[in-house]
Image (cartoon, rainbow over all chains, first blue to last red; front, side, top):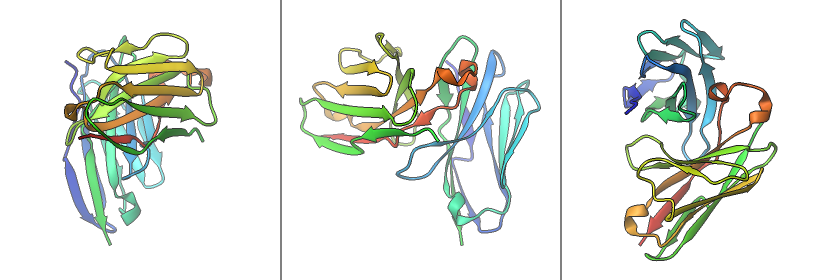
Length: 112
Length: 121
């Protein structure tokens, strides 16, 4: 059974703080790692799709890194804002699976 | 950007009735639709994958006669929970993939609906 784990489960930070969280996934048969941002009552929104070991992607104040050999990805948010409050999901896509395996998400709350 | 509209956003029904959930891709052709279910404090669990015009592929443990999936057009997929029981109460969400974007499958981002909260009394 393929397992994708995210930590921490939840995080409370003050506005302006920088934060990061982790996604762990199987290191074998890796094809792609997805990150999604999911605000309450809205649709999950794609942040990044990463496929290469050592890849780093950035979107505004949010960035992500990927280590496929050891099976982890970090998501960083610099200078958190209240509008960053959401659940951040990562998902693993392996060769020959044709489906995304999701982690349980990290719920981030940013207080003003 | 790509949008998937999912309805209803919440539904309450009596035990034994059937409930239909619709997902429509509004500005692209959804050649593949994934249906997920999420129980409290758990991850999104894939129930089935459907490709337009063909039968859905169900994940192990998901009853195909109970969760009927229809993907008859490139813009509409439906999930019908038949003879619903309280244990079917859950959050159901669809996501669509457009093969026409020219990327290899695993690198395609998915476009999600906003989900449907089903409560069976």
